Length: 405
Ligand SMILES: Cc1ncc(COP(=O)(O)O)c(C=O)c1O
Image (cartoon, rainbow, N blue to C red):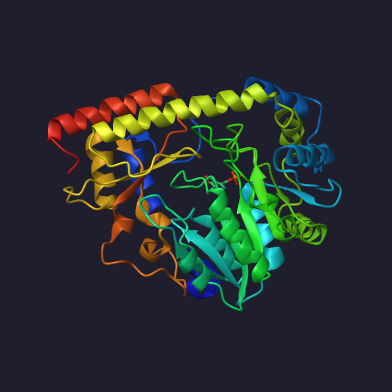
């Protein structure tokens, strides 16, 4: 039967993360692994969705009001001039917006630059389009963009650069200097940029998210993707968008229609309510997450993890195993699941060279240090109760064992 599968389907196998997820379920472990909230979404937008269903917004639908509102928002926040009729495609989450954008611009053999560590879905999606992911490592421990490495990776076949900021898994927010380097490279080499800005509202310590599209000469070559998922704690609603020059936005819409036809109608209606939230919503979102970040930083440091980089945005913490820990990331997670009753994500899945989930021609070379196997990603998009229970379990585990392992 396997010979009936396409070549690319065979390369997309389930990852070690999914296998650990099954172990975690069997052990009933507290979940600090997955990047979705376990607390309720804002009541106002839930009511809007319920009311949309009751009012029979239950058929295929394009809610132009979302595009109108997004055009106002990106003008206010990033100074972008966007035509809501031609430059925005509403999709099923950022995931579909990203996939449609890649299918709109990538031909077989085109190279796409990605920064490592990396949110796992991009590489597979580029491979599905026949593109070649080219991985450029950010420099630990601060995950800085290394201009030399980045510029060296650009070739005559480079079609686009993908930028995720605020960043999953590290919590890095790319600085203006780093954005300038990426923008300059895109302009000089006539490359496109595809941004993933799903954590745009989740930043800390007064740091502001800057969209790459807002840098000089970039709007005309950038596909900006984002969604409701993280900002409004509704990852299951599947409402996202791509904002791009009209020609690309039109291609994204055409592909989106072939793939899914339209995003869920009642949740598009509720998106109108979400996108008109007063500014104090975003302020308290940031404050709540900042308190959770600080709690987790303190907890993990107390139980023996190293925190070489404190998240500046998103809701992930990329902690490092202590030097004297003899376990690698996967072994440590297995131990945490079985003996502490807490699950997080082994870092290697964010380093394509070590994840072994699919074959890609342009993998980053593993360094002698093997640092890619020494990180663990913790998600803090969890209720206070969940974080408190995780804290209790981790402290008890370390007290009993004397160390992490
Ligand atoms: C960086 C990043 N982009 C995109 C997504 C998915 O976004 P959506 O739910 O809008 O498809 C996630 C989810 O974890 C993410 O971490």
